[in-house]
Length: 392
Image (cartoon, rainbow, N blue to C red; front, side, top):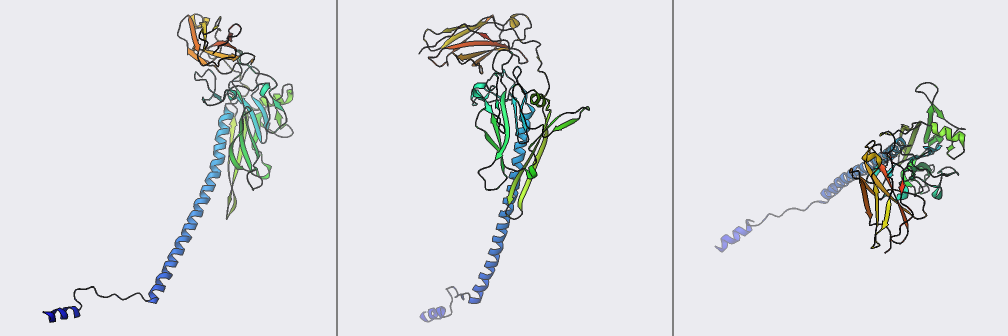
């Protein structure tokens, strides 16, 4: 038995056979092949990464100008909407800046204005017209605006804000000749809409056209007619600004390709000023009759003000076109009615009432109410007598 066991072990049965190690030549060949494959993979990865960067950069440049064109086109098409009495539409026309009046935004949930969108977070000062107390300087001029306060026919401050689009050199880049496209509403801080905008050969960003003598023809305004700035009393420029019926926007963005150098992407659009030269018409004939009176009374508890008024003569009789009533509040001495603090739908009742529980305590106030029809058009402003003071 022992002899058999020795014989079995000596024959190698019962254990794994020994394996020879790699030779030096095999190791060198493997490392060489690994190096070749690795180098090819890295080269491919670098090329792919660069291709993605180039495509991304070019797409960014194209989206840059496309977004700016969309924003400009939208706002220019509503230029002139919601203007107050004698309030101009076009204010500034230069190759690199355009300024106009339009009712762009409101915080009024009842939509008693013609604003294109509602945003409750916008400060009230950016939802109504500028006044001489907070006038601005045109972006590329030294002239200030406004010289007058513009009101609606109801006596309320105009809802049309002043909108400026203009180009300014980009001080944050080392590339010469790059501009920012900025947008400013009234006297708010401008916001950046686009970067890396260039003007090769001094091409203008904005071109202006007025109707020509022939039917459907147009004439481009050039120097020395441009630049034009609105200012009360400047009859020539004011008249020419009012004639502008189309603006051509031309934008070109630049992307610096590390191999090919500067790559340009451009976009342009001719934008008609749909309200140029048009008179504002009433959809419900004449504006509604104003409520006859308004009563304003401080609450005995001192933390609110009660307001009441009779229905408009056009709701309980007449044209029957009154849709709602809006209540306004003015701090004593301010002299300006801004956006309404409350709106109630017309219900066919002889009287209406509202309790202002959000009035800031301490100062004195005057309240007013207007009726609104289907245009929407507002009646005259009916104010309360004197002032009322809610006390804490």
